[in-house]
Length: 171
Image 1 (cartoon, rainbow, N blue to C red):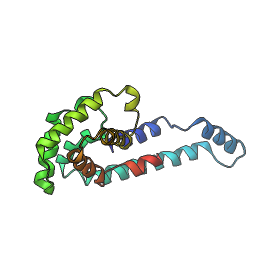
Image 2 (image 1 turned 90 degrees about the vertical axis):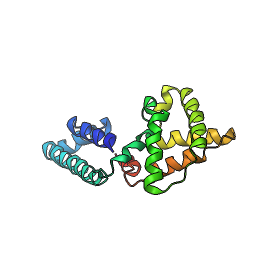
Image 3 (image 1 turned 45 degrees about the vertical axis):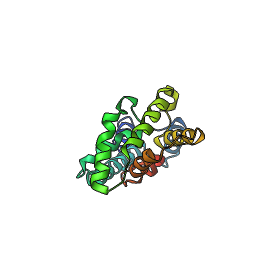
Image 4 (image 1 turned 180 degrees about the vertical axis):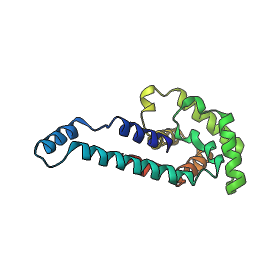
């Protein structure tokens, strides 16, 4: 959600709009259908409304700081993906949600996952988190590699109401 909020703030600050929209705005302004300053003000208010809504909505989830232990699931930064960063996720899920995880199996699956990540290019980093996990699980399945424990954590993380997947598609 932080990424989405940052994107919205940047677009608001830069008054970003694609060139085809800019051309349409020029046409509408020349024909007298809009006043550019009023349109810009309305857009700024819209961005502020969205940013405030997301901030307020996600603030309600901040009462569980342990959720931050699941940020590695986004696969945004390869450097964050290591066993020591995964362990808090395991503890959080086991203690708070009674999710059964066989840590021996999870460790082996995680090591395979790490190996898979090492072979990925920078181009792969441009994919969404969902696409990355689909690629990982598809590869594991094709190679008959068990990923059941890893899947439990990923499923939990993506099922959280704080997911920005639906909202991000709009912006």
